[in-house]
Image (tube, rainbow, N blue to C red; front, side):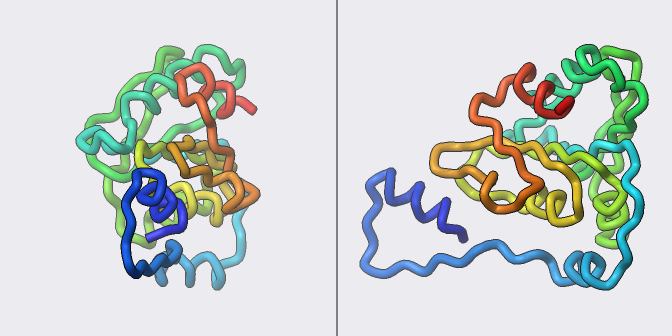
Length: 177
């Protein structure tokens, strides 16, 4: 379900007689909130899509990037970091800060976190675009994600930065910027 995924299949040599490609669409409840609710001032908050049990979401890479950011960005202690997506224990960053894990949220709670977050971090090792970085960007968060083969979300929204070489250092530098 995306031009990126269709292009990935084409690059892999898959040929079909007919194909249907459709682009991701925002969840109706999130869209209503986005369109019908006045904007709020952004908090110094990073919303991080954390799913340690789902390898394609690059949880350990994102966690290493947040650790690196916490010790290389001088203002890191002034920021709150929240994780959404899957429940697991809160954890400390190398600078002594903490990541508050909110887990899987009801849509109204998720949209509240999206509305208040100034920065988003959502990675995915897949040619599929993934919804969380798109949602983060549309809700006004400056969003860091990664490229993957034929997928580069930079052109999808002005708030998205896709990192070609997704290392902890490159991701931390993008978060700091």
